[in-house]
Image: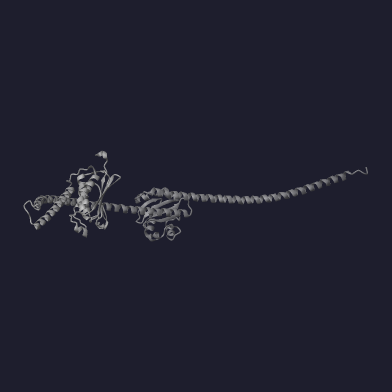
Length: 487
């Protein structure tokens, strides 16, 4: 058939079509491979970046781990320091202080060997050092004192430390002085790190702090010893002085008793002749033995007045002597001090009227106190009599009783000349009289206030005086308030 395609041509066409398909397929695959290559390149870049990030993470993790280890190490050393401080707070003995350092302390500081050596060569603590090493360290301490004094810390990187490192055959060691009051008492030596590396700053710092703390503890111990020894010496001196004072007090008491006995005996001896003189002088003044010339009568009246004064003085001396010797019978019982004040004022009213002195009472109707009525009446008479004596004409005397708390304060105030401040403490002494123009005119023995003070002291109460020159004086004393049901 002329129009039909020959088999060969058909095969060629089919082959061409197949080759074209294969070319297209190959071109498609090459394009895909190109895309894959680009993706592989991007993946490689990503992998490299991830690898870099992983390395950074690993490096950071390692640094963090090292930092954590360093922090933990510092915390452990701070804990060591805290425990050392707590355990040594109440230690007051050098031996007990250094016994706080042990093998665990050395290991916690990061070393295997440790020793505390005094400047005299005495070992307070030692672990790990052999005799040869001890001898080397002893010689170093003995011959390099000035260097140790000047250096707060000695390690292998110092001048003397380099020399010592060769002798000890190790570079990982630390030496620091333990100073008490700026004087080296001992040296602390550490050697051979548990983990062989360079001695770090942390070990150096904590070691220096421990040595300074031990030095401060030594200061405190020495101070305590000095105070304790001073206390013993002071107690000894106080005891000796107390014994001397007790002996002196006994001597004074013996002299006081002898004085009281003497006054009592003399007063008794004087009372009899004075009573006789008083009797005869009174009879003579009363002209019982006949009429006397006027001049003679005046002389006898003067004698009679002076005899009265002598009798009063003798009686006062006897009262003081009895009180001092404890022979005065005291009967303290509830009594009305208000009534005693009014009675004493009325008793001395004539003397006040003679000087135109106004008497003022400021007392309640009744005030019950514990007192010996006779003795307190004597106190009131003496104090009011003094007020009358030293108050000028036209003056005023005020008597008051002010209850307060468990006591009542009795006061006698006048408008007299007053008492100088320097004499206020002396006013109650026997025979003391204030040296002023008013006192010269007012006659007295200086015994009345001394007797008054002793009577108040028998009652275990207080007496005092308040005064201002030109405005007068106020004598006050206390008595304990009594309850009505106790009467």
